[in-house]
Length: 307
Image (cartoon, rainbow, N blue to C red; front, side):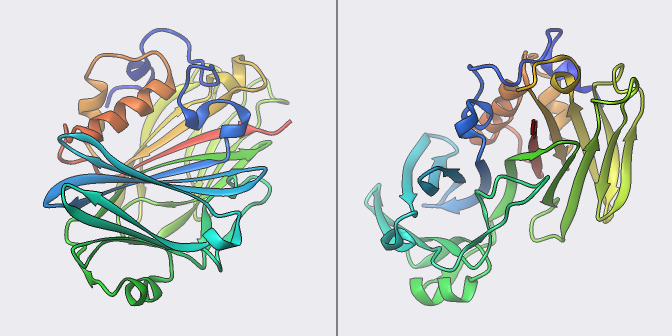
């Protein structure tokens, strides 16, 4: 497996640069979680991106649909800080076919707390459903029965797969989130621990379900790298870049990626890119183009240190 720096090229990583993607841009864009699902829609392989975001006015939801061969198809934006928008239906007309997007967030509970994610994504009490030709193409959330009842659709999940997630997490030395490393697999507690302020030789620890699965010593020399771990019998490749924590500005973030597919070898073997936002963008573009058939699952974590 090629090391993490080779994916970025020889230059230093500037994760917090203004040219980065919206996920790692200005401070107002930090409260954002992006999930990508691969499914069959209109008899074609498509990618559905669910983007959760949070700002001073409340929460927002965006559903974006991409055709693997023709690019962008359609997008639905919901600002559900207003009670009238916490549940609803949007009808979309695409190539003479109707696509229906149902949502109910009236009982949604959003998690947040020290060392955890931004609270942009609901933890329970919600559903989002995508229906086409009376078939339930995609449904997420714990209120699945309510979604089927509301939509009056039959299940069609044979080609649906959760393939990518990007999330921002916050903390001083501990960063906590939930991780699911395979479609419909167990949800694990993931904790990243690193104290760069007091030690001349900081150490990086990764915990899965309270067990240390990765330990990196001499971090000032190994601020970028990768290693393999086993999680519930699944091999997971972990990439890290903590350059900004050690040598960058106080606004910089660290980037971690947990990848369960050998496709990363193909990605890293391509032309190098110069920063982590471009790296994640490049991976997302490869998904949209369906360049690699075995995409597995990828979790990108952008870890921001609270002052």
